[in-house]
Length: 262
View 1: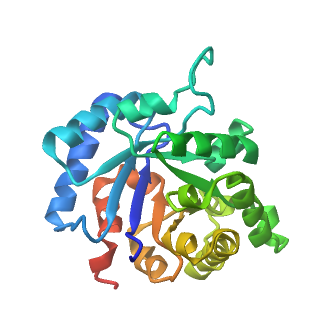
View 2: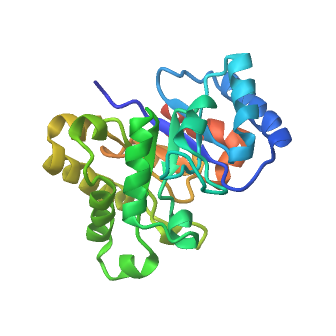
View 3: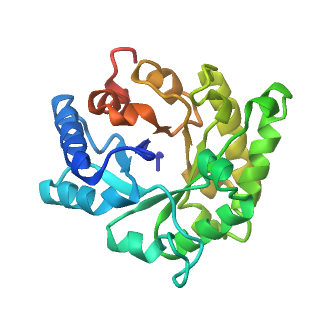
């Protein structure tokens, strides 16, 4: 079966729960205006924890063609972990996806590959789809070590994850050096690393898993460049940051398959 493209919008620490109503509704209107076909791509929003219940009510109440997920999850099942949010809590809020190991979590919260692995295994146990983020900084890129660096992160994230579970994950390649730095990653840059990730999956798990896992690109994604990314063999979607806060822009990205530039 062909991999269904996933267009995921990470709102990061933006938009309160009241504002989230308008953002989701405007996105839905934009998708309708553009005649978005949910059979051709999946549209996913990833709000802050405080918005999740509101987003769930709006999407379910209006039966919108939009999925929703969380920006993080605790590696613990429950207990005395003040400030953490458990996988069970996310499931009760209707989340189907959770971002794990985002570069900002790794940088500002010192999350290691081991932490990413623990969170991913717990998410899979709770039937949440982890979007595992990997990617290198500018120094690593300039040293030409970006592929091996990223594959090491992939290996760490997948430790002790069996093939049947691995087939359900999503991997997001986000070159940290191309996020808000003025540096630009080309579609060929994205394909180089996404292709290497798929080959790592093929070596580790075989063809069935490698051909099933969706690999996203994240790094200053805009509608103007989406088609050039999505024609690459191993790019199955995008993890969008700032552009996901603009409903029209995000809708155009989501409907990449009928872009005037395609």
